[in-house]
Image 1: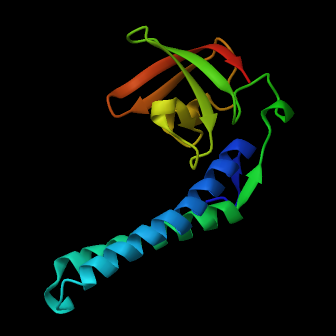
Image 2: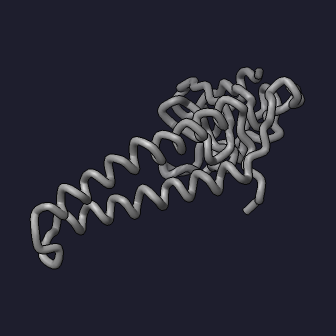
Length: 157
């Protein structure tokens, strides 16, 4: 795995905001839940206390993971990347040659991937297959449903 995490400045700001929110509001809420559970008496048989402590541990793990990611970020700008082939930050319109369904993806780092927002990781099977290709190229991808072919219809930043 590469040490660098490539992200846009917008994504870096979102990451910083999430860390700030988790460290302030998240930690405060976790502490309140622990205090509330502690007030219910004997801690040795208090499942609410155990659950609250576990939730706090998960919160701290999430903060740690995000901070490590932030420490490895290298900011990239779409306008500094070539526009002749599919690269990270390319917006790619493809058609599934099996069912003629068209879809557009923005290719991003794994840390930025969000399928609902159509942000596809460059390390996903489709993302890997598209990298370095040009308009009208056909790529074959093995997906959970089997092998599928996609044709690149459009490419831009």
